[in-house]
Image 1 (cartoon, rainbow, N blue to C red):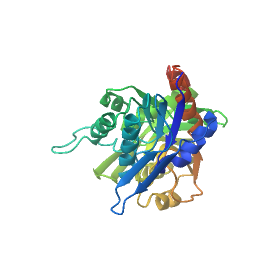
Image 2 (tube, rainbow, N blue to C red):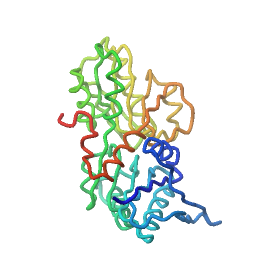
Image 3 (spheres, rainbow, N blue to C red):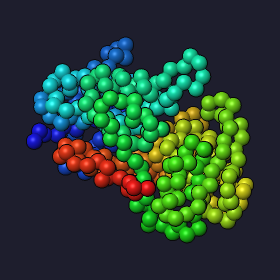
Image 4 (tube, one colour):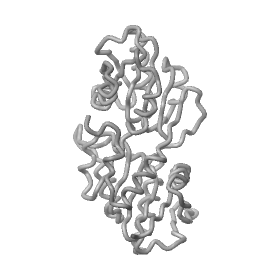
Length: 312
């Protein structure tokens, strides 16, 4: 069987190091430098000929992270790598996944095309903004789910007074997974936006009086939705509000918004590194899950077997 080579880009080196630690080998050697004009140059400093080659890189802002991933894939393809997998813990540009008004780009499809054109044979990611993004690719997609991390974490806690909540109508399916697994009620926060990153109103659908509420979302950008939802839930009588969010994008005033919000705690994954210390934010690692998924890919074993509650 071909050997495995795991590399990590600049934005995800911290995660790549934890993945290879679980996997039981060293991170692949790769030299990245920039010319004086900012142009990226990548040199893979060990042979990948015929190897199962994995590149770990979240495509969060700035866009250089995406460009770096594309260059790494191209370098491996030209070095005769046997099978190239782009491990993208956070898939950026995924929120622009349809034409919701005239003359806009569908960037999720554009990025999918770029990754395939660069030479990737497979994509491995976690919690797309919308599940249907898997259909944007013409190569296999391993769509890992954060439930495999969050459910074991929650199973160690007392959830007898817990209600799960979706911060918007679009995330109901995600929140329902937890409510169904733990046999707990589900409520919905219906939000209305006037423009991107700005919420005009929030309505709670369901009874939360005296309950400990857990909000479930895929990402937090400015954290405006989560903070407004927490405020609305407390106003409706919730005893406490926590939130679970896979991708801590946390741009703009997000950290300040969270600190001043009625959220008791925000639990996130390490698909994107935090840029500030925050007492309300708890980080759970995805490294072990990605390590197991990489091993299963190499050994031609099921990836679905890694999912928690796959039948629900």
